[in-house]
Image (cartoon, rainbow, N blue to C red):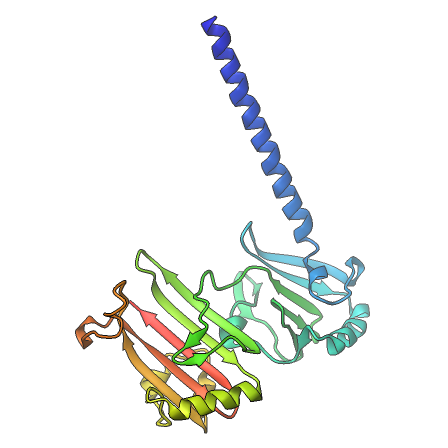
Length: 272
């Protein structure tokens, strides 16, 4: 009797293992089959016969980076589609996005050619017309970020575009948030009027040492009509202490730069 019961348990465990293995196999197979057709999700009518070959640089369950080589006979038609598409434009990504795109030659990462490029607005993809290549980054290069709706008194909900570089970790969520927001002219006017009245923002340019934190946006050094905000921060669970702390208790700083001519907000926060 005991032997029969033991056999039943073994068979049950074996059956569960087989079922689990089949589920995982189906999941992986489905993922691999779909991954090969990622180019169909980018808003252009590109077929398999338009692709000469493709290279997988990074691929796992969480992220994927591929480069598709386009047939020369398809380039002109695809370029017309890109030109007329609302999902693609000539407006380049910021440098920290661009650093995610590369090729590998002789075992070394090299930057991609930027001479004739279209950029995808709904995700991260680059179409290099000159070299007939499509680069597609499926994963979000920013593993986590805070979805701020208010930055240093500026409402950010109605932005046109937002770029995020966020690296946080550890038990106290230390790290860096680095955002840029592009606003339309109407929203920009409201922001300018708000900053004029704010005691926390100033027209006085910050020194280069502070502005050097914006390593991916060196164009801020050339801003002619800007507003600036700099303050120390204290990363703590005590909400009151976040506003009242000594210089010695500070764990980092935050910087806001607003380009009033271009309606762009640059924001940097770090805690160590």
